[in-house]
Image (cartoon, rainbow, N blue to C red; front, side, top):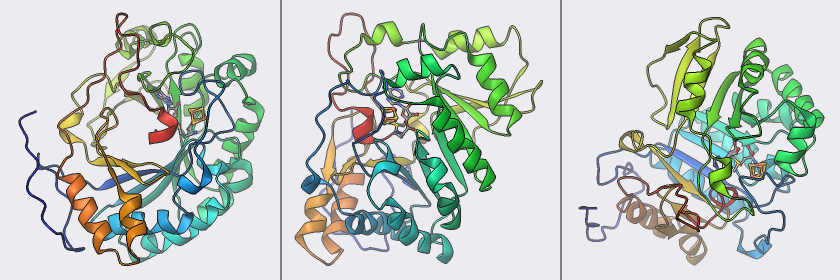
Amino acid sequence: MTFQPTDFVPSRASDGLVDPFGRTVSYLRISVTDRCDFRCVYCMAENMTFLPKKDLLSLEELDRVASAFVQRGTRKLRITGGEPLVRKDIMQLFASLSRHLRSGALEELTLTTNGSQLARYAAELASYGVKRINVSVDTLDPDKFRAATRWGELDKVMGGIDAALAAGLHVKINAVALKGVNETEFDDLIRFSHARGMDLTLIETMPLGDVDEDRTDQYLPLSRVRADLMDRWTLIDLPDQTGGPARYVRIAETGGRLGFITPLTHNFCESCNRVRLTCTGTLYMCLGQEDAADLRAAVRASGDDALLHAAITEAISRKPKGHDFIIDRRAQKPAVGRHMSVTGG
Ligand code: SAM
Ligand code: SF4
């Protein structure tokens, strides 16, 4: 890394967020809780110790931080977790953030969920201006679903997806590619998603946090999945529109879109436009690096947002060039110690 952080410069709330590599930060992902009603094998250990409630940002504090980012040019907010819909009164946060959609300052307010609570919340989310959501479904087989999530019920998630579609939400299905779990099911996932007008994105497992299992047993390279799909489907490359790690193709036979997220390759870091806030107010400038900034201290030190804006400016000045992920048989420890449920997916 050749970049040296610049001297601290007090920022104005009107300043946009551009990192040392010239990338504009326009996308904030916010994990609103580290808790979850599932225990997916690649994400969490079965026995997790969760954070004490006092360490969490309150809904008002989450709104303050998110709104400071919006003021600085953030155009997209994604609420995630843990499972965001298990956070108490979470609809209040959506309700209050929706003011930025109405004012035009924010382009998109969205959500990544496991779908277990969606039947209850889909219509309300739509009423707050949420238009698109991501729902994680790794397998359509109820027994495998129970095994992969340890605690999840596929029926409930399917009911949630139906409710979301009925509420007019665009749903994208996310599936983590897992060796020995869903590697023979991608055709079914494609048919299921595309028949309902939903995009499907396949995700490579990332080495985040200890999960009780051997990661090299779970890891299924998407290059192999893609090559296999090409035996049966016609994949037409689509131009990149997200600035993110997903590369999309259209499947000629279904007309639907299929994305591949391969975080272990470096090619998307150059266009990275995002940062991640944990539920305790820690800002990670890169999913694959430990360096972080404590925004909770800035929020709690003063009711005025000047300190918060200064802390955000300083953090963005440290956004690294790229990540350090490796899944290696020799490495006993995950490349990054925190779980995905802490940083948010
Ligand atoms: N609970 C919600 C859900 O499951 O959609 C939101 C949070 S979850 C951490 C976000 C996404 O990250 C999910 O699609 C999940 O499958 C994915 N994920 C979790 N751990 C992962 C890992 N180690 N590697 C790759 N993806 C992971
Ligand atoms: Fe929970 Fe989502 Fe992690 Fe599964 S992937 S354990 S649903 S946070």
